[in-house]
Length: 408
Ligand SMILES: Cc1cc2nc3c(=O)[nH]c(=O)nc-3n(C[C@H](O)[C@H](O)[C@H](O)COP(=O)(O)OP(=O)(O)OC[C@H]3O[C@@H](n4cnc5c(N)ncnc54)[C@H](O)[C@@H]3O)c2cc1C
Image 1 (cartoon, helix red, strand yellow):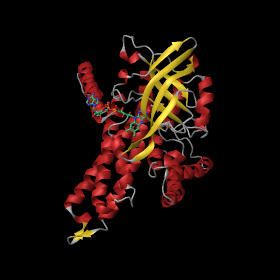
Image 2 (image 1 turned 120 degrees about the vertical axis):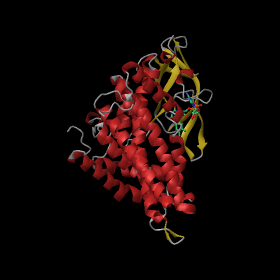
Image 3 (image 1 turned 90 degrees about the horizontal axis):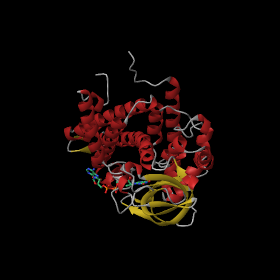
Image 4 (image 1 turned 60 degrees about the vertical axis):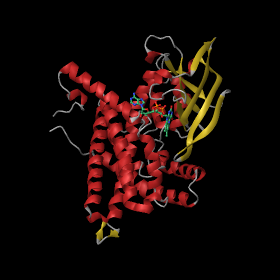
């Protein structure tokens, strides 16, 4: 029997070490930071203090190969470790596997020249710099990158970039941005019009307008103008016209990495729901004894179970070099919605306490909302899923290739 849902003892050991680090050191430090006001400065301080400890424990860069100072975990093991790390919001930052750096590291590893890797990837891996990914623009639908208006034009040996971006997460304080710009507007295939550039953020013309205030407050999602930004020809990441492909290659694993972290958040919310329901008494019994609340638990358990299976299956496919485009679309859609639903139910069961900021649920609910629209909105993933489902059926006469290609 080839199907085995257990991890090797080594992977389990790492997972439990991450869990222990989160519970015994990161969570208490986070509480301390919260008590001191919980602002950005407090969080950055806590991250800075605990990063050396993560390195000392060998819990650093779980997603990167050992040559780059990482733990070299295969994707399935990474799923387990990331879910543990994300149980406290600053956990992934302390392990240096947070978005967007984690996705940018993969991208540089995959597409970077040796020179680009030494200059940009090495400091990222060593925790000496941060980065951002600058694709979305306010004027056109971010869901369709073939519409991008930012232009890069060749002027002698240099490219000149002009454009307007927003929601470039982590831009303030980042050392460089991976910018997607249109270089070949006349290319016959719309997907061959864009190119990725590495742009140093201290360059003239890189103007951060503001940190966009979101429903969850300001989280360094920046609006930026690129005004006559001049970069050398060697700033292209990957190949000219390869920006769309690079985005897709980056986004597959990055979406899965989000799902892995969301599993940790869903678990945390469901644990809070279960605990609260068993201790809150109303109308003659505990909430946990009421069918309406049990249905919330059952729905959440079922959705989380499916979420975990989807994430592990996607990770398995990635780890084994199998195509996982369809699976990651379905997983991202399902896990994001499970996150939203389960956190919302946990808020409901906590009543006014859930609506207050005395528990982490309020912040989790605000953060959960973007998961359904960023990195591919629900409807875009549904559109792609339906397309690939039809393709599988039309090509093979069976839908199996469009529903995970499982052996049943
Ligand atoms: C917290 C957060 C962080 C982000 N970080 C980054 C970042 O670091 N870098 C970056 O470049 N971008 C980032 N983004 C932007 C994000 O990737 C975009 O929001 C996303 O691609 C959607 O683009 P849009 O906002 O322009 O929405 P639109 O493309 O305008 O879509 C709006 C809505 O239209 C519907 N829709 C769109 N297309 C279709 C379709 N084909 N069929 C049916 N319905 C459709 C969906 O309901 C969708 O939610 C971030 C966004 C958020 C909220």
